[in-house]
Every structure is written in structure tokens, then in C-alpha cells.
Length: 198
Image 1 (cartoon, rainbow, N blue to C red):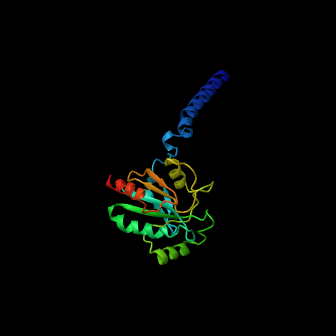
Image 2: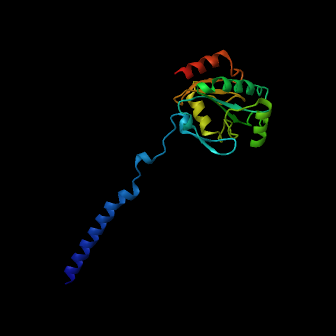
Image 3: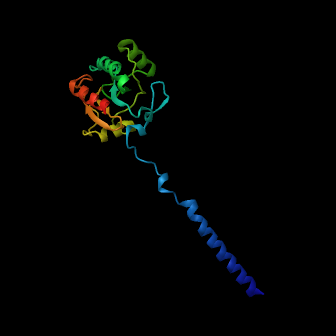
């Protein structure tokens, strides 16, 4: 009798062990597809509008973007006027000018969202999309700017306010321009019109 009980218990233990082993992989193995995919284009990002609402940049697929880090108290601040003029001239053809306020350069964008909006609209009649204040360099930099810099020919940090990234309809960086290159400079307009024509 003792031998029968022992044999029965051994069978139960082995059976239970197999059952646990069969179930374990399903509970512990994570499919590779579950891993977060690295962004491939600007369209993979979500940013905050100036009013704090999320904006998925995938809504701009098929558009040409001019992404600019802006500031209200900079010597280059009058470039707002040219950016607005470009918005008026090219938006129907598919251009989206995007302003990202940043206070990292000379503390020249100290205002809050309401103050930034008031300044842009009253001084320069800005009607193109404006976004929440961000960092464009350093450990707190926006993931979007990390992507823009790493995708441009020039991977260096943003040097000052009003640097510009031209992004094609495919969401990939087509060109980068420094502060000293004004938005309506011939080299910007040429590449912009080429991107719009594609």
C-alpha cells in the first residue's frame, strides 16, 4: 500500500511540474514587438501646444514643416515677422511654421504661455502654431529636438534662438539653418519651395 501511495504522489509531482513548465513561458516571455520603437520621423512625436493640449505630429503628414525655437526678448525676435509672412505665403501650399518657445539662451523667453501668446499676436500677428516652452539642449531637452539634431547633417547643440529645421513631407529633416540665416533667405526659400513641390 505504501508503495502505491508513493508512486501516485510521484506521478502527481511530475505532472504538476510539467504543467507549471508549460505555462511559464506564456507568462514571462515578452514579444519583441512589445518593445518601444525608436522614432523614425517627426510624425512619431507628440508635443504640447501653447495651451497645454497634446498635438500628435502625425497630423502633419504630407506637410512641409519649418520648426523654430523662438524667444520674445532676443535680437532675432523680429524674425517672427518673416515667419508669419512665410506662413501667409506658403501655408496653402502645405507649409506649417512651428514655433517652440525656449528660455535657454540669455533667459530671453521668461514669460508664461499667456504672455508668450499675447506678445506674439499683438506684436507680430502670429497665426502659425505655437507650442509649449521647451528645452532644446541638455538632459531635459525635448525628444523632438533630440531627433531633429541627430537627423540633421549638423548634429551639434542648438546655438541660439531662432535656429530653423526644414522637415519634408516624409517627416525627415531636409535642412538646418542657424540664427543668422533669416527665414526668407534665398537658401531657405529655395529648399522650402523644392520640398513643397515634391
